[in-house]
Image (cartoon, rainbow, N blue to C red; front, top):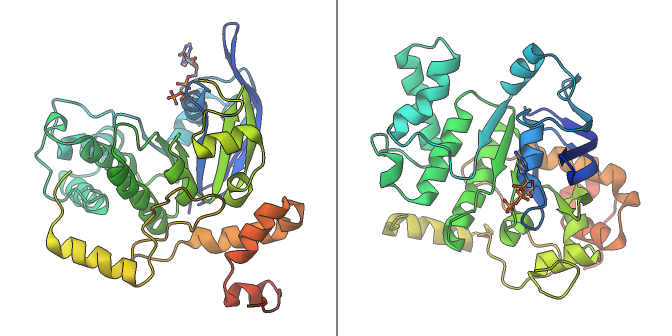
Length: 338
Ligand SMILES: Nc1ncnc2c1ncn2[C@@H]1O[C@H](COP(=O)(O)OP(=O)(O)OP(=O)(O)O)[C@@H](O)[C@H]1O
């Protein structure tokens, strides 16, 4: 299972340029979180600080009791092994085919035989829907496929924390929905802690368990998805609606069988992730039918129900209306009026 990441009073400047300060949040173990924010607010810098590629000026980043800001080089090296990172462009080597790109971390960091490597690489390629593309070069495939290949490579060392920088960048809305579904499916299968940096509203509405937002060099908020999605905070409302009014200034063909299967899933009530001018809390994506249940869902419900009395009314309503009869019995809430 994924590990918890605790960030306390983190600040980062480059020279005299303050990027953000006093950022405090916890990425709960095995849950999916999204960090939103307008361009240039330092989301990528935040990811790089988490993995130790950039050093924050003050604050702590605690993982398994180790503070990454102050630990030794050896501890940082060891802790980094817990991470898998998908960079914006996939960061693939242009001269290597997908198989060798994905095998690269295994050949660099492990003593596994080529036979073991083959099993792992093909397994991860299947997980991200790239079976059969082993010999393709990164330059020969679409942006969506490159993201998938980058994700497969991020997964080969079985990370407990997965950082994803703008999975939607350069993708059309349909491919973005597929990547969204893939991230939820991955979480169901590997139960890793996932942090996604994005400014895609649909992805933020439908994928994460928790959402935060950076704006004006601060973390405006971070918490259960229902809090941000029902927030009256002007910057948050404006951002979610993609409006100019507010404080923020200026692959592939699908075959018939797949289409029929997806239609059947939709008719069976599986939400497809689309949101058309929807306000407030929309249903969260669920794993594709046939995949395991996301363990994070139960853990998050327990966690959120413990703090629900501290949350704003809109968030409380959103959380309570997402509970089914079994949940209501579990949390001793009685039967709602229908
Ligand atoms: N290594 C660096 N040295 C100096 N300044 C940097 C460095 N890395 C990032 N910055 C600055 O930090 C600021 C935040 O950049 P960052 O890429 O984190 O923003 P972002 O929120 O991820 O933006 P976008 O959504 O457009 O990708 C920018 O002003 C950038 O120029």
